[in-house]
Image (cartoon, rainbow, N blue to C red):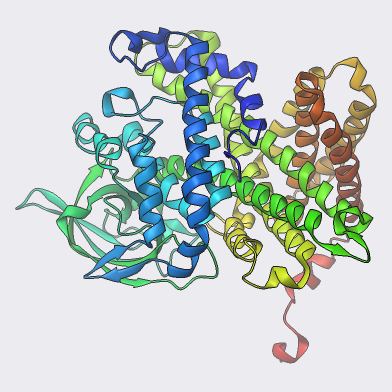
Length: 575
């Protein structure tokens, strides 16, 4: 097993994307921190060198520690001792290694002990960690909560909580879901009341399916407004574990990601601090947190897909049947090649999306220091628009693809893949959750289809088309043809103006757009590095047929059949 950063040249390639220079310049604000912190970069090249050095450290920890611990962690799992979650031994070792390397809170400003990294290297670290152990990636990735405190918390809250991440290795949790409020978070009932005598907010109620629920610092969504039942009555709060006012009632027994504790929590007069303003908990703060989490699941999904692909390749090269290694059979090398081109396409979409989110965040940081120029305001508005639809898009397509690639990898392993003798059995189980948590595929479709109905996807596809050089004309023509079909069928669905009809075909339309976008991104990547041309050619051929099938289904769909789908129960159960 090699260093996870060094054995994946794609990371360095995406770090060299031209747009990153703009992100770094805005993030570093003229590199002023170099006058205060000896580890702050002096210029863009120095910043890039810092990112690569840190990612090399992450890659080494994945190779030497997290990866080798993954199987034992999956078997041991966490447990409850004296109302506290105790991690599996390997999980503790993993977290200690990353903490000692200074990698907890790496995207936080330096004044709070962070490295002030943009999202791009942070998301790359998340992908590597997920490849090593998807369950552990959840624990590490919840430092997103620190970003939310930094973005919306008071100065006093920032000073008190944020340094704990890098200094103490504090863990975090986002405490949202309840027994009766899973995807429908506006139905949250956990009660927040203000104690007038103690001048403090207190929480009472139950939360369920909380990843890393017994964390040091938790962001909790609760109902602060009496006699409300929708999103307008919800606020966000910080709970500090030191208060010991939460009972860890239960740890879920799960199919996969077993090293990541999933808790049922009971809040009993738990003192908390309000984040920002009342009534903005879901509509503003949680939505920002969830967008970061969905980008994180996108990275986790790509990491899982890459791990599954590598296990399939390794097994296929070693396993001989009928006198030759199975990698030489067309039925097998087709599967392996399709895994590889999808991983390349997903990674391009992941880091394109990350750049969009990065720019929205750095412009927001700049706004806190000075007024934005007109062109900057327009650019920020454009990147917010793109981030809002590309984030659910990457979460949708990456999570679904990770499941498919893990499935195919296990198939390559044959009967041995069904046993616990090879890592693919664990990887296959870990993949399944990615299309469920942080918003199911069906919910991502609801968010991403806005990119279809508003024309955001189509406009961006046309911009990509202008970036293609003449020598790629044949591939470009295929994508242009796919775009014409996508535009035509999208308009047909939208013009029918029937909400159920649009919802019914939404995922097909989103996936068609995603395939075209990933095809263009691979061509554009190939213009900077020829090695991506193979993936571009094969991916466009493959997805042209997929899009053709979706187009045909929608075009020939009879509206009357919607009623037939509503009667999904077997006839014997309808009586």
